Amino acid sequence: MAGEKILIIDDEFHIVELLKYNLESNGYKVFYALSGKEGLEMALEKKPDLILLDIMLPEMDGFDVCKEIKKNESVENTPIIMLTAKGEEFDKILGLELGADDYITKPFSVRELLARIKAVLRRNVKEDQSKIVHVGDLVIDMDRHEVTKSGNVLELTLKEFELLKLLVLNKGKVLTRDFLLDKVWGYEYYGETRTVDVHIRHLRKKIEEDDKNPRYIETVRGIGYKFKE
Image 1 (tube, one colour):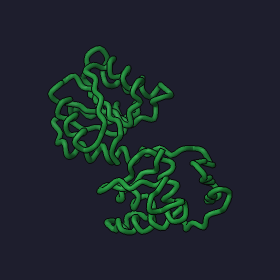
Image 2 (tube, helix red, strand yellow):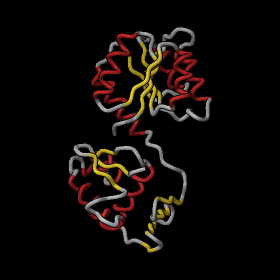
Image 3 (cartoon, helix red, strand yellow):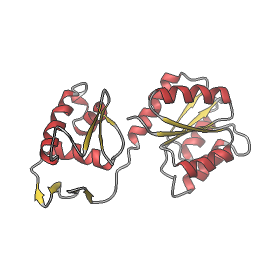
Image 4 (spheres, helix red, strand yellow):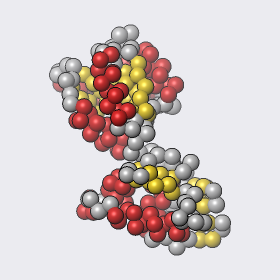
């Protein structure tokens, strides 16, 4: 996925610049703060999708920032990757015990960090807890696995329903073909992204008025699909 908001909290500006450049080059929206206190305030204001949090920070260290974020209902589920120059095992364990999702020790490769970010974001894809979702003229009943359009029940296959559910619960976010493939079909289909395209085509024919000019499922060229907000 791309387009997620990432907050960097680190007092080393050259690292912030490096991370900001590489993250933005990969399609993320980036905010940053140079102190723990400023970072906490920005986390509450911006509601990022993920936080890169240094441990050694002025005003308020990374552990305290992590603790405060996990205590606040509006951001408590925000995934956090701790950045640390220290190699001591207790630092890493403490960070994970406080609720951090992962950690990486400086110096690190940008490529490795990007891979970890993708993995953490993938684990934390938000699922709306609503059992029945209304979108335009569609009504999606999650429990009954039933979709109606203008009051008429649509005949969807299980895979079509799972695809639609995943897209709807993450509406506005771009979901890659690989992500959809893994979530709906599993790893045995790894690399067979054409399977996703075929099912999206069939799904559009059932839920769209005009499947050639879709209202709901948008193709994001070269990446995947998103359900329009």
